[in-house]
Image (cartoon, rainbow, N blue to C red; front, side, top):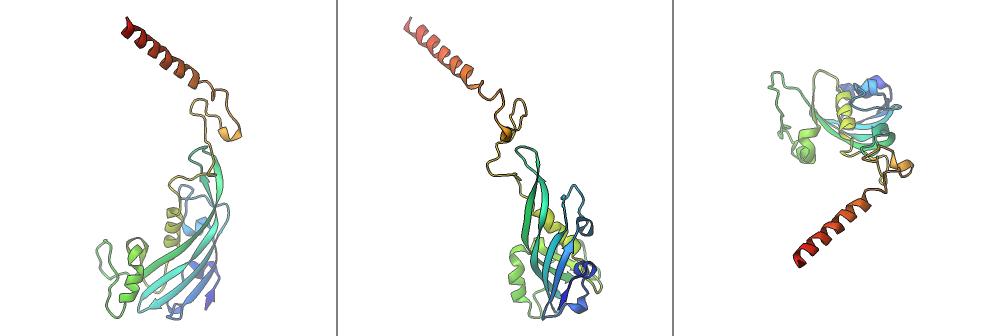
Length: 202
């Protein structure tokens, strides 16, 4: 079974998710995912393809999210468009009626042991709760987009960045202050060696 509309894509009904699976394919915007400009800048919608299966109330979600995201290079500080493509993997369990706000492991009862093992590696990061008869996928997808950001975003691997003195973008060519520092430093070292050598001889 396949659903393409945005509303059903982000809020599928539990009744539509069976053990045989439900496929969700479509596009979502930053606004629909609740992404602000501080979270991520998207020049266009993201393509989402998800497969959901429901086994005794445990909904497993796998799929792919693709698109383009605007990042700022840590070296030259320019914005660049970065291709975005990563796998989505999450598990939704029903919110307990009166549960304290703390991480809760999937109950291994009722033949769920193998599912727990499959999710154990990323369980603490990728487990979500649902209430009522619908899943809310937008917060989960938003979190995946934010966590996809690299620690050191680079516009290219060979980006040389900005000059530490004048601030010129060295990707556009060398600046005038690039060749000066090494010569006086070398002369100072040589001059001190001559002075110490002369004093020890006398």
